[in-house]
Length: 115
Image (cartoon, rainbow, N blue to C red; front, side, top):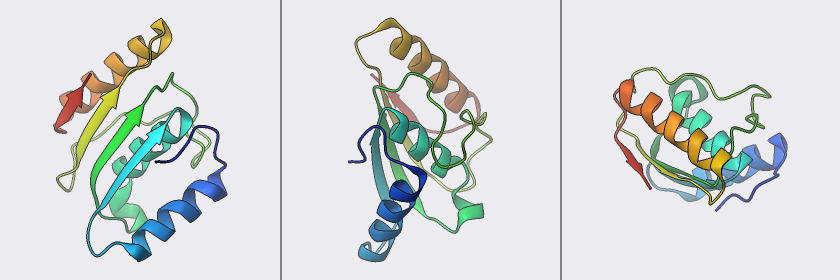
């Protein structure tokens, strides 16, 4: 689990370590801004040389992706099968953002579980 507030370098190091330790596709879970980062990594995984089976984003509010320094990109159709799990926090901002992101990923053809 990647905690909220990690820097770009910390996130990339953690994902790199997981990649080295894994014998197969990655399963990434992030909280808050790190959740936004794992969604972004899933969207851009082919370009980044990653293979991701599943990402989970928990309690995000629309923070800037700490890896790219930009808001989360609009998802495009997935190039590889990657499951997405989105879990909203208890506040209205998290619920609204999570609903919007779930709808965008579904519209692009990603398999989404949304709680």
